[in-house]
Length: 391
Image (cartoon, rainbow, N blue to C red; front, side, top):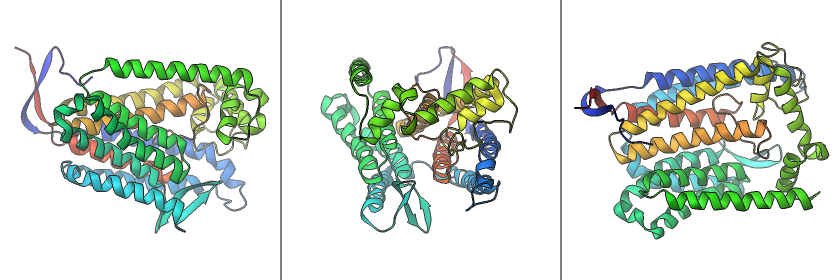
């Protein structure tokens, strides 16, 4: 994935390059997200007795987005090598903050889930855990050197990723974030490891076991007291589980189907009128499809595709292994969230609560995603190369 092109090579000469293309596509996604956020949330905010302001969600998200873009630019001016020695501290601090959610009065419960921490501002420490893993895993891999080839090293690395992932699940009641953290760790290890076959065999075996389990659940389980099992049943049999998540899934599919090729027009969604609860969050892609149709959905996917392409370019040309693996971790995070969010909206997987990056409502999400963009930009600033035809 990160090899040199067959036709061109990168020669380390010339001046550093700031990837304005990456910054531009992120800003476009944020602006597009703000437009869709207002469209999806205006009715609900205006009719909420406690809010009574159709601009409420838009105003908060716009302010946080502006600050987050500024933060990304500031982070980009720091030499990313300073994070190498600080990464173990980040790893420990992230875990400690998640523990504070569960074991101190500073933890905040929202919509029945205790995931937030109030330290002057309210945020989700599990988002910091994602950045901690992105910074820490490359550091440990570099320290291992050639010993990475051993099974013992791979198991140790997965344990390090698993500690943060299980911590996110147990300490902040956030299974989806925990799985994303573990997946980021696995992808970074996969990219750094010289052998690919064992990983592919393991992934294939896991997928086969999961498929068998889901078939058995679909056939023999009709009800459950477990919250997550009810979500799985709502995914497998939404018509039979309207009261436990199936209703939202079906309404999202109705929204997508009614959008057609070019949609009903911006602002003309009917499913957002209290039919899809909190449509501005993880179900916003269904509103995009309803109002802008298949054309709008493709535009969103193209923007995300270009963003990921820019991250691949930066990772390919990073000056060292740490830069390559750090940007690869950012690539893994963004791609996982986009895939999971869209798969949930299309009912390809159970509801996870994963937001669509830069588009869904959520100040914590945008802020820490933009910090990751700042890290990627800091790597791009240290790339020194000029493209030359291979002799």
